[in-house]
Length: 197
Image (cartoon, rainbow, N blue to C red; front, side, top):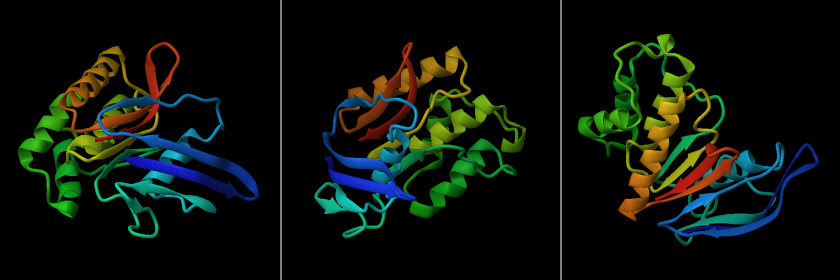
């Protein structure tokens, strides 16, 4: 479970998150909706450990973020302007990332790329925006992380790409090992979300 407890964060004296509390349970899909500037991305950053609260806490499986751990131990992230290694292809990017935790096999990498519909040997620097977004999503899921944070994951995706993401969400939901904390914005398009597995 991910628990947000009275979380407060201000940046340059401006409150960004003000006394936010919520419990996210495993095995469910959550949607987060709000106006521009309402703190949705900041909430994702808080759960990822990329923000340190002024007060309150994020508790993941009973451990307090920034006290018992610096970052969640099993997390995949797509948050604003992600760039992978432009000089490598998609497979090699994930292979390099996989060396950090040493949990993903070559088959895990291939499966993740297939699930997002990315079949290219081009170097990332030659990718379209949609291809880059597909790779970002693949990097968020290829190690079978317990927590997935996705900020506007359908940006730059065509309709086929959006449908693949929906399919991926449904498949993960069926596994019941994971739950996705998501932000659903208008017209069935997922704009931002966090996934907890």
